[in-house]
Length: 303
Image 1 (spheres, rainbow, N blue to C red):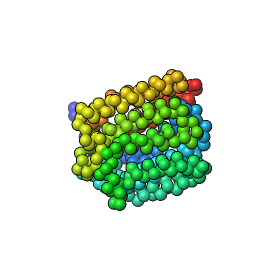
Image 2 (image 1 turned 60 degrees about the horizontal axis):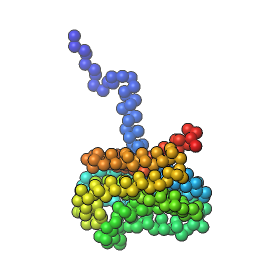
Image 3 (image 1 turned 45 degrees about the vertical axis):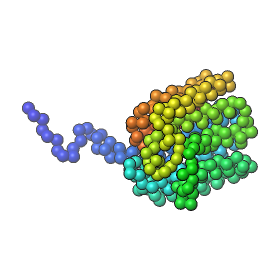
Image 4 (image 1 turned 135 degrees about the vertical axis):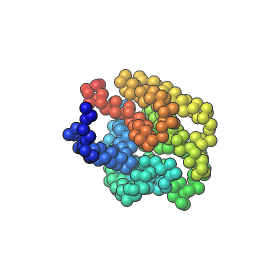
């Protein structure tokens, strides 16, 4: 006997209606955390925390974390506010087009928050001002008066990796007054790891950058040479992680190596799956993976 047809709009289980209502809310919350740059700001804070832990740095960690968090919120919202719509219509750009006022608000809140947390760190104004200047210069080509910078910024990918490395690794060591050999190894590790991830981002946007006249190594190199650059960066990071081995616990070495292995394995997938969620959630999340492992180990009572 045929089963009776279910009325239109009826749900197969009692909880289905609740899930249908809840799913868009959860997706909206996820998009907000991801595309408002709160997620990437948390990544930056955790990376800076990991630096302090690995190098045993003594400095005002709380105010530095607040400064990094709000500075990241400010700089990323500023960057995306200036980013025009793309022919690809990525999820992030579409979200930004709908949330222009929110992006501008995030930029202002980030600036005010960064200023508040900077005050206790004011004695370190010189190295901090370097970070602020570098961060601004990355987005400066999007402003009409600085658009000429995009024509000469051959090292765009290198520049971005350097900014991330400086803020999350070198600057904490400079503020603490302890940039020793281990600090150099961690700096080089962090730079080449982040650089490999930046290569994937720039590869995804390579054709658009070429059309816009943006010059970088990624727009100039052919795929075989780009592959060599990508894997060579991971190898250098791998070597530097092992150079840190005498100074860090075994679990910390594992936490540094695991993201490199995943990054090496994810290249082909990332190049064929260009979803914003793959890039801005998964790839950006790889940068803080070692810090998450480190933190969970500590919470679990590890040494």
